[in-house]
Image 1 (cartoon, rainbow, N blue to C red):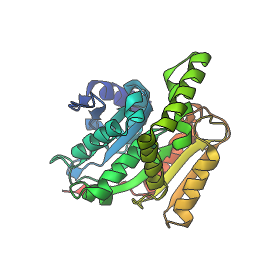
Image 2: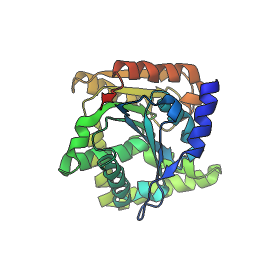
Image 3: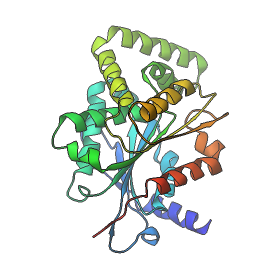
Image 4: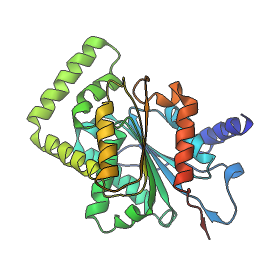
Length: 278
């Protein structure tokens, strides 16, 4: 409890916003607190791809979990237009990769943890790593992948409207508008489908962990299971799944804190959270 409290205080005080121009302040860097660092070692970097409109305080708990494993944390937060406009999402993905290939981070192992539509943003990262030589080395450094309530293409209209509005009528109106937009905006839909295909055929073959629930109204649990099974059976990846009986979208950690935390820690032990001696 004391360590957790200390980590929380250090988390909120040690944040360093990453400078963003075209994409606003979509990323923040949270260095590992001194108490969890190990001398003479290069720390891993964990990238948290947040859900739509996630706030820094929403991601604190997850960051603390990785801090206790000796990792630095980068949080990536998405706005509505960065989901609706593929070019804007690509700008954010480019910023992430620029940070991971910076002089400070270019030799560090990386773990990704994506929430909801954060999985869509990760597919943009995958695309850039596959197609730009300057970013391709990052792919070999990703030693683990965690996905919490990943949303596929068909869940985006409901997911955006549910995150952006509290009023039920406004949510329905927004969902219908987004569905119409995707029908008319053929280029955008084409990109969504291409990114969905890339995610389903993930070129990063490091171990993965899926966390989802049966009554999630945004991330269909059968789709999550299908992707996880495909990675395991067809891509020969080491994939773990944890399906909760009941918990709202991206709220599994808060409803099932102990099981969620244990699953992540077991996964980190499985991938042997690499610490590279200098």
